[in-house]
Length: 91
Image (cartoon, rainbow, N blue to C red):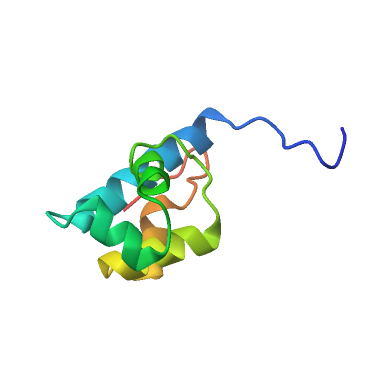
């Protein structure tokens, strides 16, 4: 495989992206997308796509900026979006 070609996303990757988006949307609460996007230094469209799970693997620094803007520790995102090994239960 060409090292410049990104491998296709798995269903688990897509689901994790949707879950990440839902977590960030919930953390945003009633604050506007415009306010959070501005605080994170990203476009409203980027925030919208991430919240809707349309960007299943957003860049780390983008996620970190959004998490900071909504006041969510990155550790919380890691705990709630970590991949689950087959056969393992989550807490």
